[in-house]
Length: 80
Image 1 (cartoon, one colour):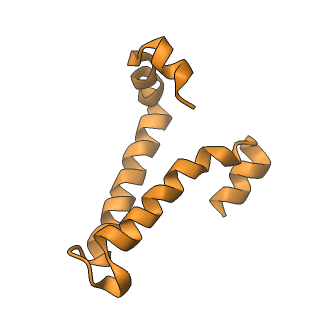
Image 2: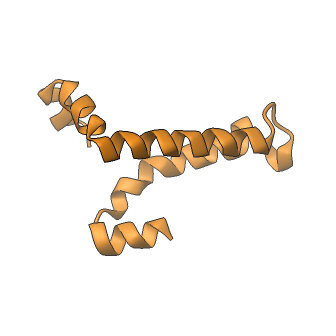
């Protein structure tokens, strides 16, 4: 659902690509195949929800923009 919204409304479907790698990492490295990893899926989902809330708060308050401005301009320009 989020991909469709980003593609239609924000016109930035490519912006979701880095997050897809994190999905694969959590799925196969942290939780493991069918829950055989070192972390339970409940703990992994909880971590993802907390991370999402933190990023939402950073974006809603404008703190994300302030953090991005701390990165030197040549690095910001060179990073896709």
